Image (tube, rainbow, N blue to C red; front, side):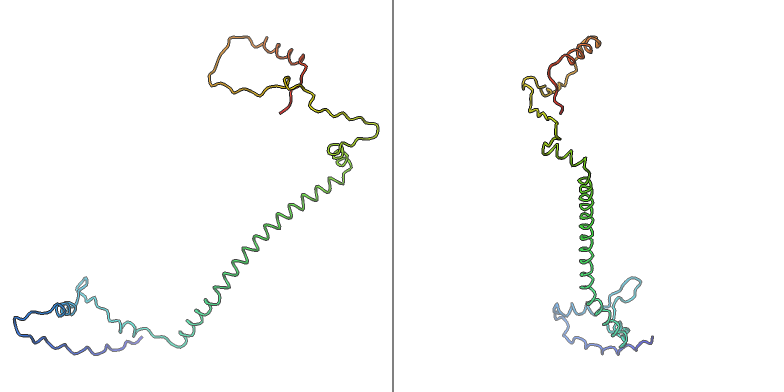
Length: 189
């Protein structure tokens, strides 16, 4: 790449022609401090000529066309990409609902197969509708136990440990005899 020659430097500014002993305004001292070249590390000048930097950038017509095509492509594809992501999320949700529906269908098919079994129909008729076969007698028992004979709920267990000196064999025999001779039945929880 060929560099352009640097533009000619501006002509030196005229010197201040003030009489000696006059005071300088603050603006001229700020201008003088700005006119002094600042030094970076190593003593090199830190000033950068922007015109020189921008002159090095050359854009051909092909580069401009390609850059505009990339911008146009991004402008067209970004909304399409958002639509694509939304559609993929909807598809995933619909696939999940299809799996749930298939599980429900499988449960209903197995229920239908059970209802095709005559033994299942018979048990359901006996349990739900109290149907009986001809010649059978059904007895319905409606809470025949006296409320005082029902076992009480267990009382809370104490935190202290008590030890009673006793032999376990007579206690076991007493428990077995009292269980065998009891007149009430325990209700299963």
